[in-house]
Image 1 (cartoon, one colour):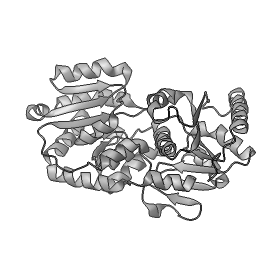
Image 2 (image 1 turned 45 degrees about the horizontal axis):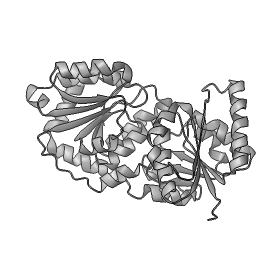
Image 3 (image 1 turned 180 degrees about the vertical axis):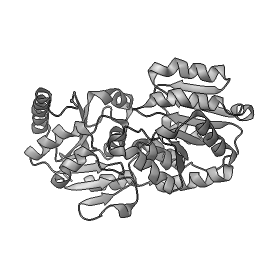
Image 4 (image 1 turned 135 degrees about the vertical axis):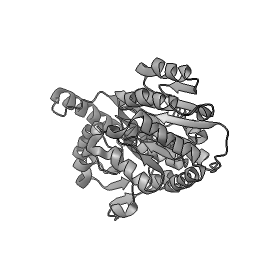
Amino acid sequence: MKNNYKIAIVAGGTGGHLFPALSLLEQLVTEKKKIIFLSDIRVKKIIDKNKEFYEKKDVVFHSFKISKNFFNLPNLFSNLFKIFKIFKKNKPNIIVSFGGYTSIPFLIVSKILFKPIILHESNMIMGTANKLFYFFSKKVIFGWGDKKKYKINNKNFYIRNPVRKKILALRKKVDFNFKKKLINILIVGGSQGASLFDRIIPKSISLLPSDIKKKVYIYHQCSELNLYSVKNTYEKNKIRSLCRPFFNNLPDIIFKSQFVISRSGSSTLSEITSLGRPAILIPYKFAKNNHQEKNAEWLVRKGGGKMILENEITEKRLKEEIIFFIKNKDNLKKMSKNSFSIGDDESLIKLSKIIS
């Protein structure tokens, strides 16, 4: 490959689109590739928190304010003009897009300039942006669900969703021993719909029998708005906990947790399965095309967790599921092994080879 070969990565919106892109960025940086990373301003804070991966490397970042309303023509044309200028100046050889409506203006400019496009689809259900540009793309990479679901050929590829190198390093240390006296439980509400978790889960855990409550330690990633009330509920019920709007060391917390209670966005699922953690999944019911429920259904079929739909969740039912996970160690061990089997140590390298 020529030294001036440049790869443009397009990602933004939610963590499901961003974290696989950041994982790829981390891999490409280690390979000393030249990168242009394009995103929207909503995820700038997350990008800034991962600066150690790309600081002083050959990476150029650009953030845009992209309207969800495609008919907001002033915003659309302004962004198209800016992207056009960036592409003309930086001359990327290929564009890798991780989906979401934020990718649309970048993909439009890519086609105008005859740039080859690679699409990455991390969910079970293909998103609208990826559907729109599927026939205009050179390659499409699918990352969740069974391989046989996709028509694999010279255009369609199946590679497990990429995860951060920190996750891959911890994956090598995973064991399935759950005889610890302390039971660590991670609660991750995701970038959307965390308020339900903040409201119901602390109350459910407060209903646990006293002998179990003494053993649990809760890591709860909650919304900043509800931080005080969540912490107060745990403290009032003498439950040990650490509550934060964002955990910078989330891979370490996943690793030391016995199981996870989470949404079922593809990025979260890919990280917890890479570390072999079983999960109680509560899909976000307003997710586009109901993709979170489909993501969760597949993990449940693989024996890696259980699912409770939002419309069916109650404090009592969730309490019973938590008790089942804690008391049935053999079942938890089996789910953990099933979850672990879904991960792929080589996903980043495989993805890099296809792109390069």
